[in-house]
Image (cartoon, rainbow, N blue to C red; front, side, top):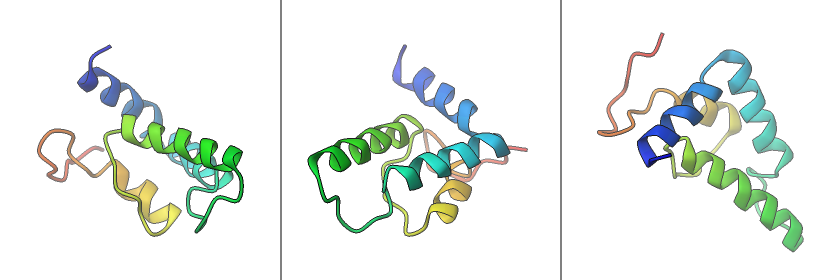
Length: 86
């Protein structure tokens, strides 16, 4: 699977309202928004969800979970411009 196909597949998976809720839940459960991981296991889980976000085509860490999930699917994949995805 090439990079564009991977990004499109991940975005399709998490773009629905249910997908956004699941992604938000995964981020919270993984401690993605916590200041510091306490153990190597917590770091590994956080690294894994960071990889999921990378596969969705985003690499920056947001300030809040809801802000991140809502903005994720407004980002363009290739040029960074806002897409109208309704």
